[in-house]
Length: 233
Figure 1: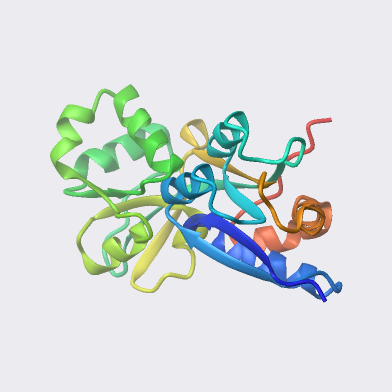
Figure 2 (figure 1 turned 180 degrees about the vertical axis):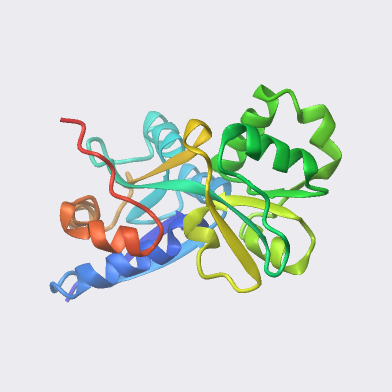
């Protein structure tokens, strides 16, 4: 009997990957031991040659690992797309975020703004730069530590307005989820997976990745606040 596959990922995908791995195991495939940590830490550990069968991270991080020769050539598969959502503390008055102008006004009104260390946080800072607000907002920005959900900062009152992947904010107690970003400034992160160059079970790992990328998993992705990657063809 095959031993469990080892998979490292960032925190944003941990619930989805757990569900996908369990669904795949029901077909008789090997079980999966999943370790979810901050994305920067996960990429560093794969870069340093730590032994895992698979890695799932934001696509830009996967591309860097591929370029560095840390992944099995041809193994990369797009897993899911994830949009950023916005939250306030439960019981507080929700601001209007229905348009780019309304969201900009809500950001200016907020006394503190929480964001993540991941790609969505980087994209949010780029948006604030584009709006010309970075100098105004600098003292109000609170970056959650790796592995700490922005929603927990919102729930505790440490930040007034929180931005993070919808999958990270959904179902968290103590917050009101306002919804996604307005379409004109939507921030979407794509997560991809790959077999590592030093995988102990590369064939089984590739089979799991192919399953995760397949149309059969679309409903699970929606259930966990993400969506299937559109077919490019």
